[in-house]
Length: 227
Image (cartoon, rainbow, N blue to C red; front, side):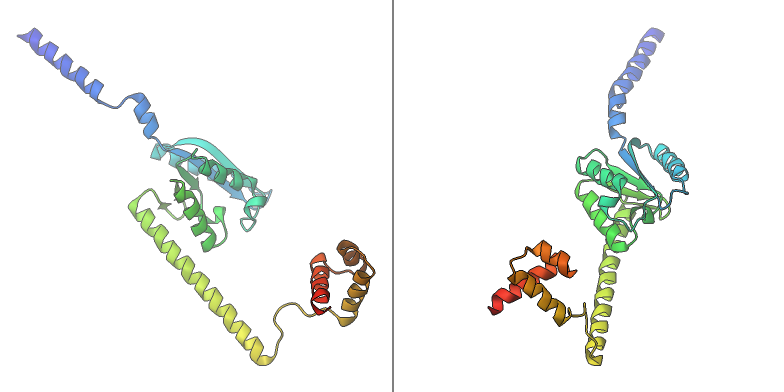
């Protein structure tokens, strides 16, 4: 009787081990994370950002597959001036990562519209975002809700900027202030026209008269229209 009870207990224990998740399944469920860190000057260091983000990844059970950094680069720079940021977006596009972790929102960009555009891009690839300082995690319901709210705020910000620009233009028109670049001097226009009539190339005319090639092309189109 006792032997049967022991065999039954062993069978139950074995059954529990078989039914439980395998090591492969546990590893596959861990999110593939990419860390992004940035500092604006060469005198600063990314080590503090990395220390915190690595701790967060460990607590959250993420597997860090990439670490991207831009050192001595302003957040106002575009993607082409930030190689680490560019590599991050390429990794997201290749579905190499499932969540991007950064120390703060200003590490990614300097404006709310930039952040919303970044979030839209990575979420279109099935990737989430974690921001430590703002406590934002778009893999959670509250994080997704905040993301939607950020989109509303960004649209509101764009609307305010547009209305202010329009109001400023209206004030300038009322006061008779010209908006945009001042017109090119007539003497210079005539100089460009003479050079074009002499058969000089657009680049040669631009170099000789000190104006841009776009301006020379514009003068040339005007000459052809009035001819």
